[in-house]
Image 1 (cartoon, rainbow, N blue to C red):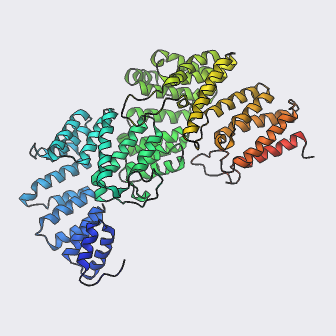
Image 2 (tube, rainbow, N blue to C red; image 1 turned 120 degrees about the vertical axis):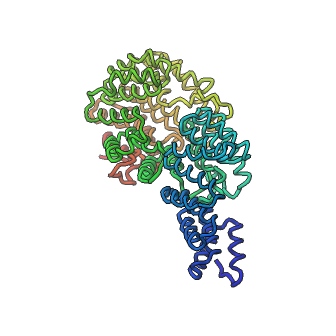
Image 3 (spheres, helix red, strand yellow; image 1 turned 90 degrees about the vertical axis):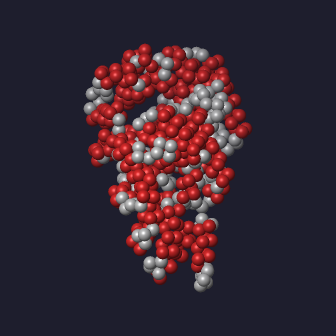
Length: 634
């Protein structure tokens, strides 16, 4: 910054504050404060700037000095107590609030103390303090709504917030609270309505906050954690929108909601945003997700669901030792953040790793889940089945599912897993009976939420079904001599993929590719390598769109099986097929330079050399093996 001439300091600082350039103003004010350590003007403006960039710790320090230098000014005492409260140092904030001895500040003191007690989770004390206020005071109505929400009385809380809005007019934070109530009531349409209003007003009134720029791929600088940003409630609104999308299983929508929010650097992110980023990107960035959740757990405050989500994700990725360690090291969090059901479920999952013969849940516990919560029962049932699935005891898995048929026969998750276990036992006709209804739901429409306004709405498509399900159904058709049905299903998949390629030429879609891969694998397993390998090769064309980590995994298994049988002289390939195989591997060399051969586990200690973990590297190895087996090296 250029040097400021004498006599222009005041004008310069006020202009910076007017333009919301608080950081630059702080820099100048701090340099002035070093020359005039007791300057009331410098301290007052400095505390104001710190407050506006949400640096409440430094704001509190400045206001503390002002209360000592000018004890007669009541406003400084109020701002000092408020800054301590905002900084999260509640005992000091309570102590400072008692210094508000002026009768004019009594109401402010009561409101502040009620807020402090609420944050300290002393809800009865917060309620007692609020009851000292007039019942027509908007803050009384607002804060009583918060207490009702905490008690799970979402409809009553919503009424309170709506009443406060009628008195105060439009307030983004109030609108957010109403949306939150509707979210908790699972009325997502109404929640999205209020969220949309918050976002629309935020964009219109504060274009400088760069809403949506990151999603559009525009490189923008951080807007910081300013008071203006806080007052718009945009961060809270986008986080809630992401939560709704996540609940509706629209992962792309959830990711977009988080990238749409005003840009901030990672160190500026609030705990809720950090938690949500970890959760919605877990499939693509699991290592980062685990790091963020573990980091949050070490902070003084974090979203209540962080502890349970970290434990569940460790179990999902089969890091049972890490889950057990986190549970043991944070025993004090168990009773606070885990429900009895969640604790028993996690404990049972971890116990099964060391004592797999033990029942996951007792008969009494399972029966209580059947009577209490269908969704929880499904989760427990699948966890029980997985123990035997991992041991390839498919008969036992089927037995577990048969016992639950009366309770779960309408549940898609149950039907899908029954189909899988029947398929694994070569019971193709029975498997078709379970796969078909799931797939046919998507012939003309896709199962979605019933919210007309919901942005998760997308065009009906059979591609909303998992590729593995489609592949297994096709194989089941072929194995029961229903080739026409298999061909019809594949035509539908091909038609949908062609439409997607037309709409978005750069998008990769793997459904038909995986179906063909599975069919090719089936023929290879039956010993018909001529047809099977040709099918596998054709499934990956065009390579720039179909060659991926998963598709390569299935393709290379067929080639390794072929090479093994050729080396044992159990299989003889025609020269034309051999040439086709070599040409295929050469194409994989060309297009596989940037494609990982395997996706490493997120918390793996030893990593594969980056040059070896590519499809190109493995394709060259397979080609060398081909040359050796067919004698071209000699």
